[in-house]
Image 1: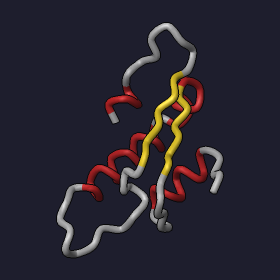
Image 2: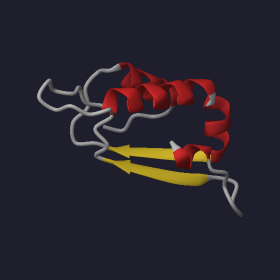
Image 3: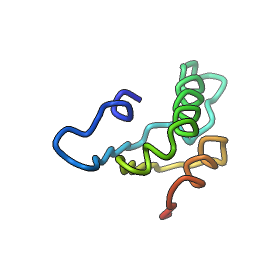
Length: 83
């Protein structure tokens, strides 16, 4: 999230690569973490700042497993999906 908010210094655009974040996967009951809260915050930020993000940021998600969650639909609606 910090990288999304940080301005591009010296360039028109910047690229953020996110690898195996777990954001696109449901949490198991055994695994207790704050991934859902993080996922919800990122999804909200993406929706609220879509025009600014499209103008200055390229985000590449590299994930091994992707499940249909709200954030998956949001990201697919914003950009391109190359699976």
